[in-house]
Length: 209
Image (cartoon, rainbow, N blue to C red; front, side, top):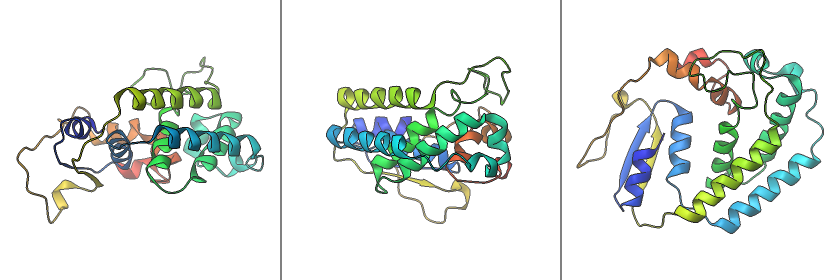
């Protein structure tokens, strides 16, 4: 999820990367971008304002993807739906991507997903986290990290969503780095199912297998 891209950026090295999983490329892009703190805070305030003034999403649960209804109760789903709507009201730029990435990061904690489990498993005793509270906490954490470790270099970073094996033209490179297959493609798709469904990358997470 963009660690090599981030380190390349830190060391002023040009980077080109790809992944077949759109969630992975979203995270990688967000991690390797440069941000203005004031703009980040401005967009955060806009998102919270839209969230607090939006009330017409309460019936969306009835028409939700069945897999999302499996993981989220009605109240948490509706709160996430309002938040997702508020984020998508932002201009389509790197700041919206950053908040979509943060949105993605709170999905497991606000769902019935067993905490710290790497496999999709429902925890019948779990009390899902409050959506807006955990989102605000993650946003503040993200802004703090940017403030402390902001990257400002002239290196070029390009990240694309594609199958490397079918890419017809590739950039020249001095070094190639690849991740080992630590899980099967089935497990990989299952681990990211909440984000792929919420972010609209698929209506059936099994298709990503």
